[in-house]
Image (cartoon, rainbow, N blue to C red; front, side):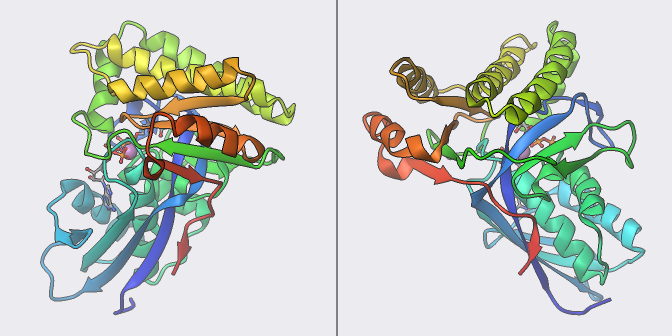
Length: 322
Ligand code: ADP
Ligand code: DP6
Ligand code: CO
């Protein structure tokens, strides 16, 4: 075992076909497959150092010590997999708002998976890291990979992991994050999706339609059909939010400005500009477009949102050691 800090960087990812429900809460196995784009603009840096004198893991987030049982649970899995016993000093910095629907849990556990295994002297493959990151947060399974990543739902720990798509598009995609509210959400992704699984009468229909959406969006990409790609992503996101509205108790992640953003995108489309939105477990809307249309879309969005709330991202890289 090494006795020095190891730092890893992982980028967030935004799902175009969403993961929203677990069939196994312990192992974090999803009800359906999902597909995401890893983003260059938003990431987490995490350092891990195993120290023989610690009697518990110590975790700092953005410079403040935080007690988070999810970290201890995850590090216990790492210790089991790496056959090590020391506790760790973990320091993490989010270059993304935390718990705001911009996927901090995805970059967080992807970075921690790499840093924690490398600091234990082990060289996990990307697939092994993807399986491990999944145990911290489902969406993290996809943040191991850059570009488009598909999470294969699997049926057990071994078969549930992400992989990069084996084809590319030439769209030079951009994602504009419209930051409506960067504060932590009231309903965590973990709690929200479980409420939906247990109470929404629409849940069986979601599994069916999300599975169809995943196959259809990959086909649209292979057909170079950006319009169909965007339509499927937008519809899939709205169906996820429809689950939340139909849960008991019902909840939602919309704020007035979220609806303004969605309407602005629809108006742009009516004016002949090809762009689509998606939204996660938080009020911030993400606009999907081609780089060639970026300026005209930003011009329009500037009518409603200040420029420092319009963050432009492109495809980001694999997880890496710094
Ligand atoms: P998000 O939309 O940001 O992914 P979630 O509700 O899925 O929001 O997850 C937020 C949780 O992820 C936080 O409460 C915290 O437990 C965890 N998290 C966020 N950033 C980090 C980090 N850098 N290191 C470890 N855990 C983190
Ligand atoms: C709406 O991965 O954050 O962003 O697995 O419970 O940690 P846990 O949840 P998380 O859920 C992400 C939900 C989503 C859609 C997605 O990323 O696929
Ligand atoms: Co999350």
